[in-house]
Length: 400
Image: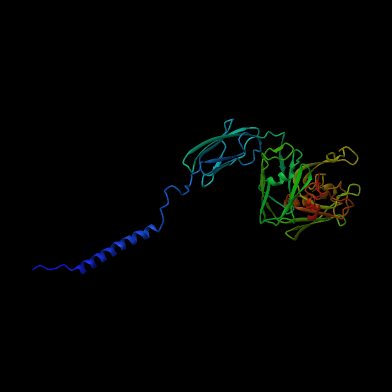
């Protein structure tokens, strides 16, 4: 049997196909609405930079202070090898930081020497860089050495000042003070005072606490101290503060009362300076102790053969001043001790008491003299720094 075609059915199929095509076309049109793709290569690219080296001091620098650190620093990369060698052949010790971007000398250099840096490193761009740099250190017009009064490892008294005596005039006092470090446990406040252009002293505000540990470092080598003067050698010492020993001497009662940590240990009959040569009143600091010491009046300007001169050896003598004042054994004046003042300015006592006193005292202990006459102890006569109040000590009116 033959069937007839259905014109309506075919029309429906055509409409459906058209809608499907239109739907596909619509999806394709939505994708094009996002706009054109960005052309390749238009974004900024990060550029790896080459290694840059900075030398301190700069290349061909002269007059370089040999105590200052010499460095090389890397930017945009790291260091792989650094050497600093003197033209005289010495290799300078140095150290690299953890990320290998800086190298610093670990020792001072010599005077008037030329040194050459040879450095290699790798930049962020992967390229190796090699550079050299040379410089010459300063040649001093004069070198200054310093003496300190601190005996290394000693136990000293609560009044111990720290004295620095230079062998030449210093024009840059601040440079000296910066080069000196004084550290203590427990921490102790103090300050410098210059008595002249070659002598500076550091003392605490108050007496040291017994048991204090003190380290002194005068790191002056290679430092520019002004006026063409450079430090020639470092000095260092450590000391421990011992018992608080203070002797109070009364010129009117002719007695010395010695206390140890606040308790009276002994009262000693003494004889001080006679009216023609009185013992200056003031606070003395024990400086040094001597056995079988020759007392000679010529050391302070009176000939030993003069009517008022002398030259005699004593068994026990302890210096209290630069001007020749001691406490010492004086067996010839035992009858006067405790009764009258007959000495040339020293503190006379019996041999037994002088021996006991020397066994009890030490450098840095304090001897306070009162009622001995009209003269006053100068703060520059020995280690007599406690003659000045703290306000006077820290005043701007210091030695020229």
